[in-house]
Every structure is written in C-alpha cells, then in structure tokens.
Length: 342
Image (cartoon, rainbow, N blue to C red; front, side, top):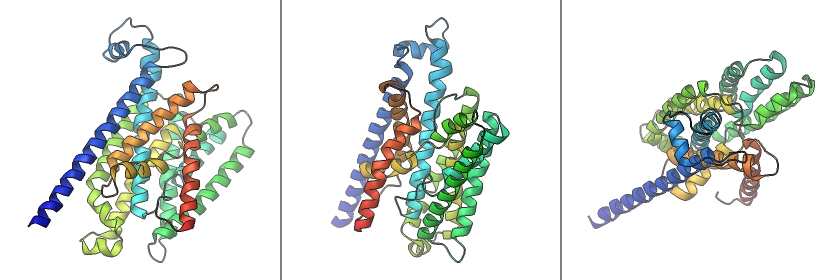
C-alpha cells in the first residue's frame, strides 16, 4: 500500500513538473511572438499599437506593416514550427531513433522535388506549388514506406531507405536546378532554403486548421504511440493493432510535414531538433507531442528574428536553423558511433 502511494505521488510530481515546463515554453513562445510583432530593423512599434491594429482600430501608425507583413509571417512561423516539431517528434518516437526526422529520411525532400519542378519548368503560382509539394511529399512517404516494409516492417530498414531516398531526391533537385532557366533558379533556391517571405493571409486559415486537427489526432493516439515505442511485441501484448496504428500515425505525421513544407519550404532541422529538446527538458516518460510543437514554434520564431534583424545581411529562416542543426547531427553521429545512448 505504501509503495503504491509512493508510485502515485511520483506520477503526480512528474505531471506537475511537465505542466510547469509547458507553461514556461508557452510564455517563451508568447514573448517571441511579441518580439517579432514589435521589433524590426526598419521600424519598431509599441505593443499597445500592435494590439490596437489587431483589434481593428484605424489610423494606427504602421498598421499595414503590422497587419499585412508581420502578422502573417508570425502566424506561419508558429504553426509551421508546431507542424515540423510534432511531425519530427512523432517519427523519432515511432521509429525509436533520433535520426528518424522527416528532413533526414526523405519526406521533406520529396515535397521539394515537385515544388522545384513547378517553379523551374511549369512557372506555377505559389498556390499550385504548395499543392504540388503536398502531393509529392505524401507520394514520397508512401513509396519509402512501401519499399522499406517489403518482407516485413523494420524501423532501421525504414530509416536507411529514407536516407537513400533523400540522396536520390537531392540529386534530382540538383539536376533540375542545373538544367533550369537561369532567371528561375533564384526563386527555386529561395523556396528550397525554407523562408517566411511572401506569406499571404488567405492561405493561413487552412494551415491553422490542418495543424490543429492533425496535431489533435496525434495527441489522441499518444498512448498508442508510446506503446509502439516499446516495440511490436509489447504493443501487441497491450492490445494495439500494430500495423494499422503505425500506418495511421505515419500518415498523420506525413500530412503535417508535407503541408508545412508546402507553405514555407523545407525549413531545416526543426523536425530534427524539436523532439530531442522537448525530451531533454520534459523527460522521456511523456509523449512530448505538445512540447515538441511548442519548441518547434519557438525555434522558428527565434531563428527568423535573428536572420532578419541581428545579422549584417538578411537570411531566410532555413539558413539559421540549418546552422543550428549541423552541430547536433555531428554530436548524434559521434555518440551513436561510440555506442552511447542519445
């Protein structure tokens, strides 16, 4: 009886700690939103003016910049950051490997292939490029999963297949860029880098809707995801339909990453970094879906502010996040080579 009481107390303490950390991350996110909405190299606006503009008041100085430039950019950063973070954490948890990030196993690059083709050869509009990227990402993920699971499922095989697909897609993209018209290449390169420029307000409601619905679906399957993390044998003992559950979770994560990529391009390392950071600060006993999403949003907002305001030259957000991801990838590979847990 005493042991059971101690166990329950321990669970309660972990829940309180987790909720406290979530509140801290959320406050950090709100602070970054305020910073991105108020500060800038060209103009700085009081937070009170920002609120007045958002409430619809007229005659406020800088209303156009706040409402039509900074607000769409900030919303896209938040929800695409959540999408990348949640999708990356889902793949890493499901496949039990920190290298199992969508931007490493070919899903994000699969979206990029169609987008680059649309920009360079079809001269498609931004909306059409987004649709092509979404469809291409889903098709790439389906092909990777089909190839990897022939003869039985294996997480390691899926990761290796994804890395091979990543190399193939990257080579295909490089070939298209090499053969593309010179005046179209800069547009394709900007999209490939991952950036928040030219975000339009009319596309944001659908982004918000998709991110909320898909993230909610992954959260709903959180216990199943934790069961699958234990391995197929344990998950089966727990009464989980392993194959069906795995396919559903992968589809949800792929839709999330493909849709986010279709809006902002493949922002590097967000999916790769968010899950491990959330796990470090919240603990491994949580599914960390929410915390990974919030961490992803924080990274995108912070990186965009740095790239736009704190450096001599303005850089797309994907350049800054790529710089963040490279050292962690090296650290991960070194530790894996040593046989250490990461």
